[in-house]
Length: 417
Length: 89
Image (cartoon, each protein chain N blue to C red):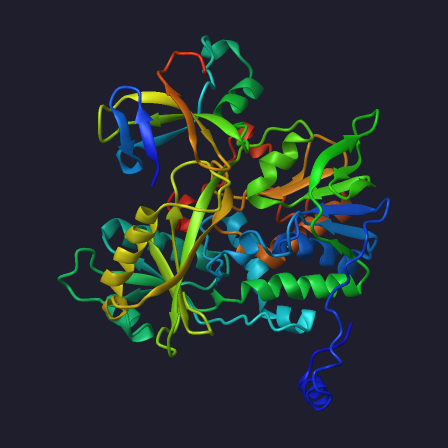
C-alpha cells in the first residue's frame, strides 16, 4: 500500500500528480474464498479489514451489488456518539468510539473524525428526565455525558436559540464531548484500501442472487451476477437489503426497511461548532468541513426500497431547524436524498450466528449504523473468525426477541420512526 | 407524498394515515395453544420484501378505519386497496 503522508504529497506534487497508485484493485471473483462478505459499505469493508488484520484471514471477498459505500454509508448524516442507555449498548457504541479515535492513523487514511461534541436538547420536563437518566447511566458505564443548563448549552453552541418565548423552549441539554462527526465516504474508502492491501478482493457490480447450501444444510457458496462463488463462511452485511438476502437462505428476519432522508445546504463559512440533536422537535444538524449544513429527519412512515421519501418529512425537520437556529432561515438546501434503514423492534442491531451453519448476519442498525462502523466491523470479524460472538455483541442476537431480552434504545436512537 | 386510496373515503394524502405494517399476519385464534416460536414469529418475523407488498394502513385523520393495500416497495406505486377481511387481490 502506497503510504499517504505530507512527504508523499510533496513528492507527488513535484511529479505532476502522476505517481499515485490505485487505492484498491478491481479483481475478477475467484472460484472460492474462505469468507465472503456480502455488502460493500463501511461495516462490510471494515469486517474484511479486521478479518485480515486481526485474524490473519485474508482469502476474503467483499461482494457489492453497486459501488462501495453507495448505500447507507454514503447517505448518512455522519454523527458519531456512544450515549445509548443500556449497559450492552454503552459497551458496543463506546467500543466503536474508541476505534474511531485512532482510525485515521490505523488506516493511514484521513477519515476526518472530529470530536466536536454532540448536544441533545431537552424541551420539556420529560426530555430533561430522560436525558438526565441517560447521563447517569452513561457515567456509570464510563461513557462521558454531562447535563448543561440552557445558558451553558448556548455558550457551547452560540447559534442555538434559547429564548423563553419559543414554541419548544430549550430547558437544557446532554453533551457528549467525545462525540462528533467523520467523513462517511472516507470510511468506506479507507477500509477498502487497507483491506485490499492485505489481500482482500473487493468485487463491485456483483449482486448476490442466491445462497447455496450443501446436503447438511451448511453454507456452500453464493450465486451472483458475476458467477457462482464457493465459500463455507458467509457474512451478510447489507443493511436495508438484509431481508432480501436472508430470504435467499429461507430466513425471515425481525426487520422493516424504511426510507430515511437527509439534506445538505449550500456551503457557508464555519458557523456551527458541534452537532445538535432534538428528539422532541425532531431534527439533527451539524456543519461539514466543506461548509454545508448536514440535516437529518425521522424516517418516512412506510416500508420502501425507493431511497426516496416525501417532502413533508423534510419540511418538518426544517421547521425545527428554523426555530432552533433562526440564522439558518434563509439557507438554501442543495441536495435531499434517502437511504434504506433496516429497523428492529427494539432499535438495537442484530449481530451473530444464525440457524444455518456458516451463515452470519450483521444488521438492524436502523437509523444509527454509521457511528458504530469500526466497532461493528471489528466484532463481526471476531464472530466470523471464532465462529462465536464476542462478549460485546453476544447480547445482540436473533434469539433475544423470542426470549424477551430486548435492548430498547428507541429514545437513544434519536430518530423518530 | 403518497396519495392513498382509502376504500371508504377515496384518494387522500399520506399525512391523513398511519402505517400498520405487513398485512395478513394472523394472531393465533387460541393464544395459549401455540408455542413461543409461533408467538415470536407473529410478533416479530416479517417478509420486508422488495416488490408488491401487502400492508395495512389506518385512516387516522379521516374515517379512522384500518384497511389493506398492495404497494410496490421499489417504486412506491399502489397496486390495490381493499377492506380488512377481504382477500388480497
